[in-house]
Image (cartoon, rainbow over all chains, first blue to last red; front, side, top):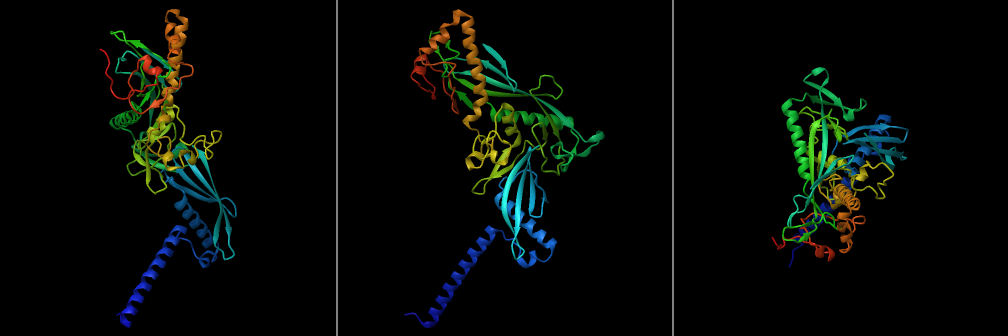
Length: 122
Length: 301
């Protein structure tokens, strides 16, 4: 027969395992979404802070979705309009140009509306 | 007999002298590449060069070529690219072309072994098929923006070009991919919805989206595919049809092309299927039966 103190310890251990599992799942989800996502507080602090949030978002997208990891890397990210940005990635014989349309949420954080990719043959 | 056809991209030589009951005809495509050094300005030992030779692009540190380094680089370029492409394909002779008769009186129809040769020449030579300028990167540099006529000294290195769906690196030596282009091959996904032939076939998606495609040498990897035999198939059709025309002009040889109709072969509609495995020469009966011989057969002397 199990004594009350042993039941408490078993319950505590089970709760600890469950907590670790939930924490691990959250961590994995956070990594998938990009851990460099900045907080709303940071992004709406001032224009420079908001720009940093936009560039972080674009860098996160490149890290997660651009698979051609050879070449010369990112040679520039340039703002082309209030909500438009292009990232240039150098490859042998070409430059891949990823164009981003960004919107700003009410809390000041940027979100990607669309990404299109074009190529400049060199 | 050895005969040559000069194509714009390469010279093709067909050798049927080597044919016997066990050995096929050999088709060698020869690329004459004209190499030119690009050295730092003013004879300096070190300098810089813009990616793609475009003044608006980043600069990379370069150093002057030495005679020894230049020779080593060219030799390595030619030997490694040539060994990648040569001797990998056999074309099955479904045209009935180039028949020969042995001393014993047995007739055979050879298949064709596909070979490739790269000849390095000076960039100023008049008969170069292609001209390539080459910068020598400073050892501290790991990458330079090359293009089809401007290479760098590290373009022969095996480097990561892509990442497959499992996160594995897809590696390639740039020069073997470029030699594929020089032979006339396009990127792996040309013609697919994400890489229409009418669009920019240099777009990243054209290098392969599915794992299997990106691993092709005409994608981002190093794998040969049977479709890469197309330059040899194009060349052999030229020789095969040329043989028929020669037969028409010389009536004494007419029996050769007409005789092929008896075994169901016709040079005009021949496919010349490519194979990765050696296929031995066949008798007319074996051709007519569609027999493919990949193990050494017993043949009369």
